[in-house]
Amino acid sequence: MTSTVLIVPGLRDHVAGHWQTLLAADLSAKGRKVRIVPPMGRTDLDCGARVAAIERAVQAIEGPVVLVAHSGGCIMAAHWARQTRHAIEGALLATPPDFERPMPEGYPTLDQLRANGWLPVPRRTLPFPSIVVASRNDPLGEYRRVAELARDWGSRLFDLGEIGHLNPASGYGRWPRAELFIGELSMN
Image 1 (cartoon, rainbow, N blue to C red):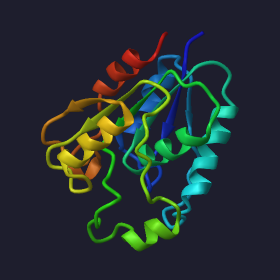
Image 2 (image 1 turned 30 degrees about the vertical axis):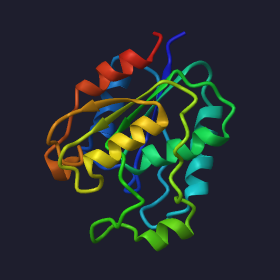
Image 3 (image 1 turned 120 degrees about the horizontal axis):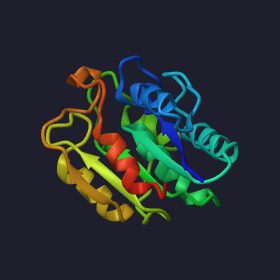
Image 4 (image 1 turned 120 degrees about the vertical axis):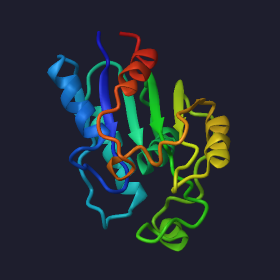
């Protein structure tokens, strides 16, 4: 049975032109089953609600699942992995932010993240294979700190070089390498 790809967006939800949005369309056009965690709205920072949304999405999928998370979605996936009983084939965790350090202006503060259940960031080994993709110049997560997360999660770290936050603001739209990583994580 072919795995379903579950897209887990970050705090800014779905963005037109974002690699996750384009990936979902491309995979669907190729006949691949794709689901997207429903948008929560940019102002709803409740980590528990977002984790529950991942759980509901996984429960609605029959068969194997590969998670594809970006940014804050990576942290959501780590929180979700601590409490789920669902077996996952693997997870692609692209440019996780460092929520344990102050974020740039326009992003949640440490106090907001703490009050909404994001902190502490889970540091236990994930119960499924995972690949963390990191950037050398990500404004939301210093490479060394993201590498520490990858190590703690038991993830393979992939260095993409200087790609910013791998989002439209960094000049990224389609990201074909995502399909290669999904192929590595998927049994089918």
